[in-house]
Length: 329
Ligand SMILES: Nc1ncnc2c1ncn2[C@@H]1O[C@H](COP(=O)(O)OP(=O)(O)OP(=O)(O)O)[C@@H](O)[C@H]1O
Ligand SMILES: [Mg+2]
Image (cartoon, rainbow, N blue to C red; front, side, top):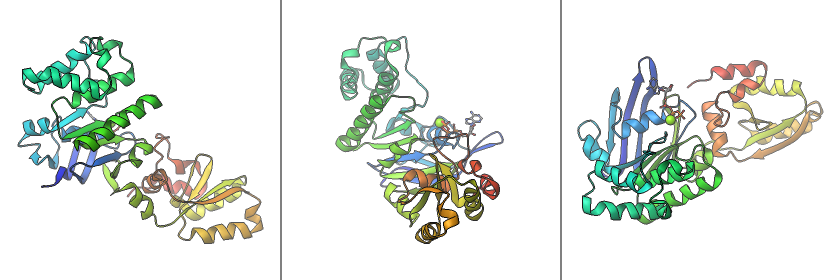
């Protein structure tokens, strides 16, 4: 594990009978930006907690900056900065005190704590708020403070568990700027979990995780290319046609955003067929050949929609397509 910031090999973890991680392996190169993309309950937080020594995994190996989480937990904790999914500031302390307190926990030498705290505040543009009680900050500002705090002990690796969930667009954008700066100017390795496709699009590597298993691991561009073909996107007015297509393409056909998506082996041929067959054509309101977005790759791989997490997109199709509901791999 020489040039990897994080090395995970066959990681498994169960909470009682719930298998949260079922043999995950991945490697995060130093200085890279790695996104772990997956819906609710995929196992993202479990993986993050295993990385930062908060959880002792059932089995498998986890190395952080060359240290094994089992045998060198202290070194691991020193190497990484962590932003939890749940808010973790002390609301009763001021912004500055929150940072100083963290500096003590992480044994930042006393004489350096204050300078580091100011640098952290500058990074996340909260200098003017140093003396405000944390409770008075907006949600976005709290998140920013948590990011500044995570960098206080100057870790080489920053792990963020859904850092932008629930934030408005501006706060989200600002957080993206800080993260980009950390990677670019300080060479910090970033690992973040998200269920927002847009966040994963900017990563060097994306791992798609679902039900405790990695479904794919590659650059966003390679993931899109991996499908190797365009998707057929259809807007239909004819339920009969919709049903026929659902039966014919089964789990390679799903519905999202008011359109039917089909991952056909020969998309051009399907398009041609629909355009030339009058019986079909009358039921088609719109049709397109589109390059798969990361979102479509995700749906094709997992049979699940990230945005509409409770529902299986294929479930909304009729008849035989319901077979796709049980679709597992
Ligand atoms: N402490 C726990 N005890 C029992 N089951 C748990 C515990 N923590 C998580 N789980 C279960 O393990 C699975 C993975 O959970 P995890 O929190 O890692 O998912 P996640 O990808 O972080 O989801 P989310 O996007 O909702 O944060 C889920 O089925 C969850 O219900
Ligand atoms: Mg989580």
